[in-house]
Length: 502
Image (cartoon, rainbow, N blue to C red; front, top):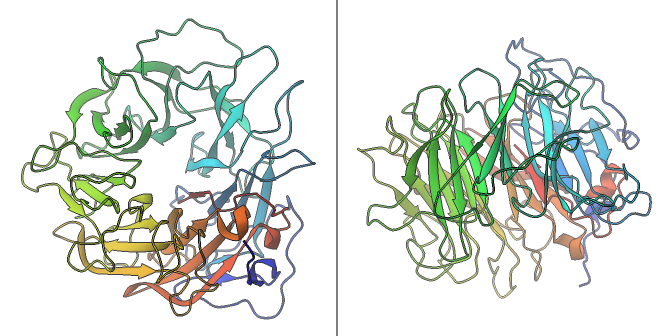
C-alpha cells in the first residue's frame, strides 16, 4: 500500500508534556544504544515511579518493535526508551536496546520487545523493564522466556537477564508483575509451567501458572517459587492477566482471562501470604460472563478498591450486540467484587461515546488506565483498530473514557483518528491506528498523556503517536508522530509500537 507521509523519517525530536512544545533548534539524535544522561527534576521527588528507569522522578516510555531486524536477523526485536523530563518525553533523550543471538543454534526470531511491563524487581529504587521473548535453543523445545533489563542512574542495562522460561507453548509468553504475597516486593506471575534454564524439574501438569517471588537479584535469582491453579477443571488457553489490589488489603490480586474466542471468561484470584484464593469467575448484573482479549486493573472511582477492566474486542454478545467490541468493568470490594456497584458494559452505543457499535471495530483492544485530566480519578484508553473512518476501511481510532465518583462512564469520552484535526498523518485503509495504547505522565504534572501504537502503519513498519494531557484531558493539539527510523532503527517490517509500557 503506497503511503504519502514523510513525517516518520524526520529526525527532529519531539517533546510531549502538558502542552506539546518542540525543543528549540534541531537537536541531534543520539546514536543507537546510547545511554542518556539523567535529566534533573525541577521539583524534588523521593518516590521512584514504577516506570522511571533512571530515577530522576519523571516517568519514561518504552516502545517495543518485535519485528526489528538486527544484524541481518529478522524478528530479533528491539526496545526504544524515551526518557521523561520537565518538558516531557523527547526523542533526543533515548536509549535503544536490541536482542542478539545468545546461544549456539539460537533462533533469531526472539521478538524481543513483546509484552512490555515495568517494576522495581531488585528494590534499588529504579524501575526495571520486562519483556517476553521467544526461545528456541538447539536440542531444547521451543518456548517463551521473561527477560529483564535493569534500571539505574544511567538508564537500562544493555544486556537482559532471563528470569523465567517455559518449554513448549503453554503460556504464550503472558506474564504480569505485582506484590501478590504482601511482602512489599514485586513478584513475577506467568501462565503455564515455568522453570529455570539451568533446571529440568517435573512440573505438575495440572498447574496453570507460576509465581516467582521477589526480590530478585541481578543474576536472575529470586526469593522462591510456587504454582497456582486458575480453574481445576479447565486449563489456561490464550491467557491474559493483570495484577492490582482489588480487595483493598494492600496486596495485589490477579485477574486472568482465558478461553476460546467468543466464550472467554475472567477469573479473580486474591493474593496473600499463603498464595492465591479463588474468588470465582466474574459476571455482569445479568449473570453473563465478563471476559475478553485484554484486562487491566485500576481504581476508577477512587474508593480504595481496584476495578477489573476487561476489553472484549472480537465477539458480540453482552454489551456489544453488533460485535464492535466493548469495555466491561467489574468493581472491586473487600470480598473481591463490590456488593454496592453493579458491573457495567460500555460500547460505542453507550450515551456520550463517539461513534456507533459496528462489527469489527475492535473496541477493547490495547487497554490502558491512568489519570488524563488530573482530577484524581483514573480514566481508560482503548483502541478501535478496526474503526472505519468515513469510507476508509480499518483506518482505526482511539477512545478515552473518563472515570469518576460513579465509576467509568461514556460522558465526556473523547475520540481520535488520523483524520482528527491536529493529528499527523492521513487515515488510510488497514492502518489499524490504535492497536496499542499507553497513558504516561512524561513531564510529571500528574496528568497522563496518551501514546498510541500502530504497528501496521506503513505496511508493517509501525509508528507511535503522542497526545498531550491538560485540565480537560487528552487533546489532539500539538500531537506528534514518529517511527523506528527516527531513532536510528531499521524500520522495514519492525512493527514499531506493537507493545508499549505504561
